[in-house]
Length: 109
Image (cartoon, rainbow, N blue to C red):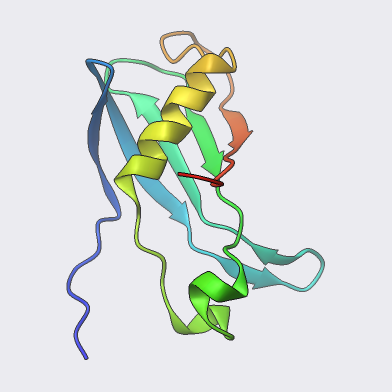
């Protein structure tokens, strides 16, 4: 079975503005914390401050019984919605400073 090449980074235009994104972490098991979801870093193409989008681990219905068997595909719609949510939560991509971390609610997206 062949799945083809996955996108690990790219450029999205959201509301007329260009944002670069990059997969920083795939879902993984951590002894202390249990399952950790996918993490995507986003920044405005001309900006400095990153937004770190943390996606929860999907439920068993979506992934099957073993979460390790399938790698997640980056869903551009969810990344776009995550960028919009970060902007609505006062992320200022053109400012300087530490990256801001946002938990992305994937219900309904």
